[in-house]
Image (cartoon, rainbow, N blue to C red; front, side, top):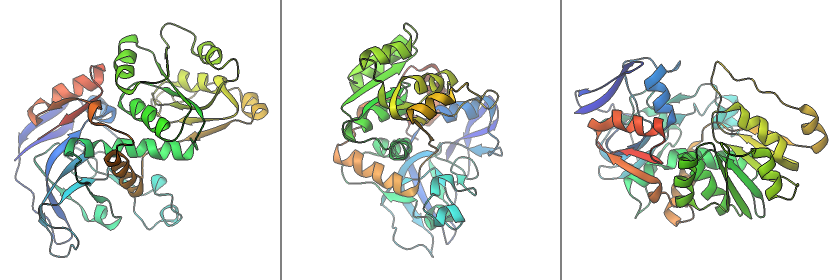
Length: 346
């Protein structure tokens, strides 16, 4: 079979490999879609501390069951499935308390296990142990199902930030995850959703698809002033920073309303993670700042259900569908912001 295997920063090879065979506790799938994201770009450029090369990467995975281990129950060849990316252990104190997204023993597809940039892939026992292999609802394409994983991360973030009916919401960052946040905020009942993006071209591309109520180009105006002007000085109820920019986090604290909530969704570069924060704003305005990291198996199931119901459509966000041979092109498209969601179809 053909795979895309990461060897070192800048060294991702499309090469031939033996088809894997599942053990008695594993499932083998034919990968039909594996979407790309900013993390793939980071891995390609710099590797990752939790990834020991050589490794087949790709973690937004959907496919068809082709072989089932003898000890596995509930699955059979022909089942259409989506695979979680972040795999909690299911047994630690955090997991037992229902906090699977912050499991200290978490492992991941495409990091400790070969991922979805391949024609065939093994779903390991640890995924099955936490109910992380999900049935794709009828009528949903493999490409749409592959977007469930990043969407699940957005669901987790908006749950933590308590986005609800009537909220005035700002989403910073117009990449695929920002677009998903815009649609999810609206589905969660937000009265207004404003999309903020530094680059005018990317902002317009995203806005044409997800139709936010307002847009702000951070490269042309003062974001804090623009948001306060839009809200008559009140500020917004929720700000979600879906970008790896410390300045976006600093600004969000200044334009949320009293008792507003700020979600630090996008992690910052490891070599520059410190921001300047006026703690008196947090104190006197009773602000809440929350983080959001990944998703749980249940979030993935919720994501598939919401996509299938039409509550949060994703098909039009998939702007590029490429074969595995074009994985380098896919990474370039994501890196350069030329599209929204880029899916590899091995």
